[in-house]
Length: 309
Ligand SMILES: [Zn+2]
Ligand SMILES: [Zn+2]
Image 1 (tube, protein in one colour):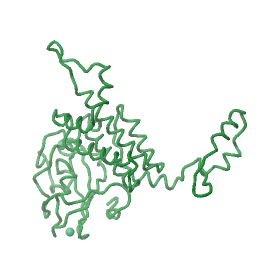
Image 2 (cartoon, helix red, strand yellow):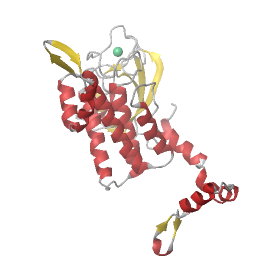
Image 3 (tube, protein in one colour):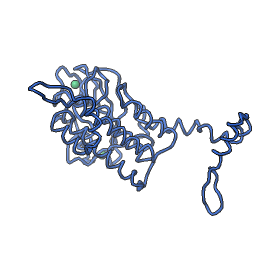
């Protein structure tokens, strides 16, 4: 793409390339000239890669869409990344619906006929999400991620996104929430939020929340938003990823870093996010209040200093 007079853009290279390719001419001269357009800046690409949420093992028809969304971010295509995340999430929700629906005929339960499945695409996403939640096929947390992502996508689909890079990260984070809470095969097909609500885990040992051997069961986002430091400040918090070790009930444990708004209290807490709802128990020295804490995603931020802590 070249900038012409008056700030207008034009790209007449495709015609040139077609003529060269048709004549089987070698493209070395052009390759050299356009070298910087043909490869990505490795430093920038790796930096953007480092901002992505970790991808836990997952498989299924949503995987190519998910990988494309991640690639768009790595390549710096933030606007299309937001749109792609919305598309992938919608696909996942419709697949869950397709899998979950059964039809009764002559008093016998049948799987949904193959030819009926494309008709699902006509249903409106928020109605499907509500239906699936009521049918017990989608947790309220997963539904919230689906709806938040749909809203973000709509803003970009109508060309009115204001902070593409930030919103692309937010969209990816929400998409990974949707994946982890629906179709992720991590930890033996178990879905996040699908085990029963608990305040503490049976067999736990050590300091509640502070030791991975006594993780906090349930949704870390809601829980951390409610937490207050000993001075009463809400926290900004960021999920650091899973530890790769199992807790007292064999669920994989996640680490979350928190920094209070006063800046004087900086902690790591451990969660077992396979449980529904939130725990009523609170780690020693902390308290709970209205959900005012802020979840941070990817990249640099006030929690950067505690990276790898
Ligand atoms: Zn558990
Ligand atoms: Zn504080």
